[in-house]
Image 1 (cartoon, rainbow, N blue to C red):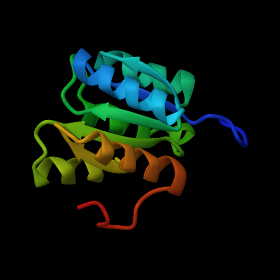
Image 2 (cartoon, one colour):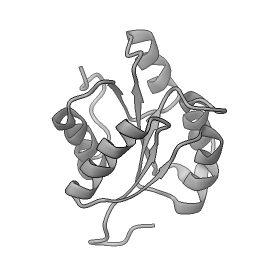
Image 3 (tube, rainbow, N blue to C red):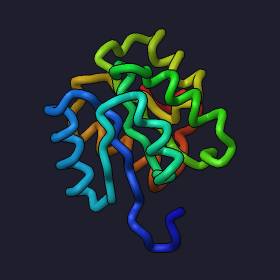
Image 4 (cartoon, one colour):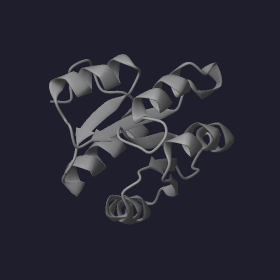
Length: 136
């Protein structure tokens, strides 16, 4: 658990290396501690072990989907304060509703602008969850 003034910890769950490299760069530049998991099956055990402040979670992953991981986090009361920002290349309204219904704190479509992602990450880590319907 992060104490006062401690760096925020972000876990990137992304199987595509090129996207993960961009996310790694952004998290480093923003000053967050971060780690990466490239496989859906490894995500929940890592989340439970490290208790990150935020999970950047791809929807389409090998073995276990981002939706299943999101649901697993939300069903675990010890992880209630972990924020989840879901990312998908299939950014339809249906995908967004499904992610938010399963407990995601935000949803971003790929390809995303780094500025847009930075704003979403900051909003979740610094300000808490957005007001209902705030993310267009």
